[in-house]
Length: 115
Image 1 (cartoon, rainbow, N blue to C red):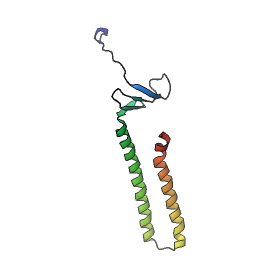
Image 2: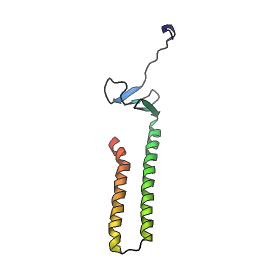
Image 3: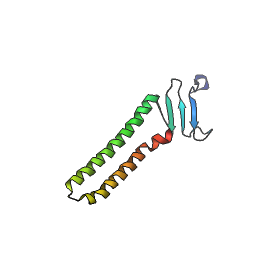
Image 4: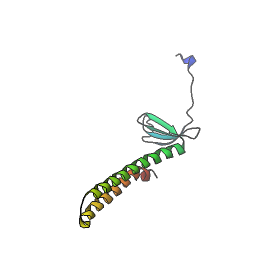
């Protein structure tokens, strides 16, 4: 393409954050002229409106929460099939509660860090 045929363009995005100032290959976050939130990570840019990003994050959390609930139900089912005394049940319930707490914290870790 010759210089006579070159069409320039203007970047209308408003940058909010860049991992390394002046490094145009660094990860970054920007707002587009139409109000989309763009996230550049590893050279790939995804642009969505705020509500779409929120739905995406909510769906991720709900999937993790469903996995935790399924694991808890599976543990309860295993307990139903196992004959034991109440004394033997206490450590298993404590372990299930600890695992649920740990997994809930993992599932919400990204959400609390970004707030």
